[in-house]
Length: 461
Image (cartoon, rainbow, N blue to C red; front, side):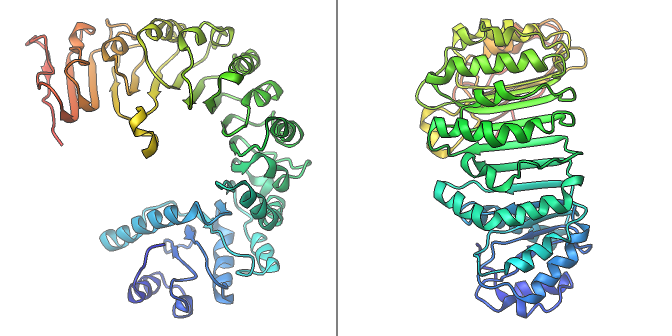
């Protein structure tokens, strides 16, 4: 939490016409850390420390009937950075523009200690969120026990929320420990209008316990909405085996978008591929957007073998968008990747290939080192981006070289030994632009010297 002088808070609260501003500043840091527009339909609240005053609760209740997007965070460890970033951005908008150019119908409830707000007041507050159609529950924590502790505090609140606006829900995003899922979802929960489900799962204590939890609570929840779901996104981390989910999902006739993010585990490799095969066999005819992201931890998959597995040969006749995040792009992998992508050339209009960070960058988190994007009105794949493509030439050759007329190249750095002049692969190119943060060796990015094409220059940062 950032330290904002009290006089600045008073000015902000006065500008927003928030009543009883002085009472909100009764502790060292405000109980009510809020930025919202003048219509009171958007709010970022939290984290909360100390006891929330009656005036704050009344103000939350006055906002609630107009809120359409509600988010609840259940742990302090994940909230401060988000709150800080949101607040700083909104404060900048306030000082520079005099208004808040952020969505006007979203509210984020913060983590708070049990004594901060009486449970009866929280339940009464939930009764006011009658128009919510987008709900996000962030209950993940580094400590698994913390997740279960938070579940005991927040599950009555969330269940009450589902009772109030469950019939209106169109989009639902859940971040939970597998073992805590059943704490929030009643076996009979049905959201008749639910179209988009985003599921982040982690912290399975053991593989067997995870499978049991998925089969008994998560899969039934997903399958109850098989007739309404249009998009499904699943992140599976830390002992969460996605193959159980993939095998157990029912056929969903309206599902057009599917995304799966998971870590690569050699011991579960064939189970994962078999699960994908089972899923594509059911949903191949409905899928037009597919996103598969695999993060390697201790070993790298043999992608050259992967893309020859039956799951990647399943017909996807209407696929328009394909995103793959893979660990590496070795030379032996280029051919099999090209073969896999080429089977969609009749329908594909968006292709995104991503890589993981280099080993020395892993401690800093995922950072995209290299990238480029190509666009053209006449090419089969008008959007094509790559992160960390060390074999840049081979990557450029994946798409047919005969149709690309416009090429934009973006890389963090230009390595002369990796660079291949694009005209070698794209003889019909007419325009070319390039942006680099810095050039390690050499500055001549044109290479061919053809004068009939119009090129831009490198821009240095």
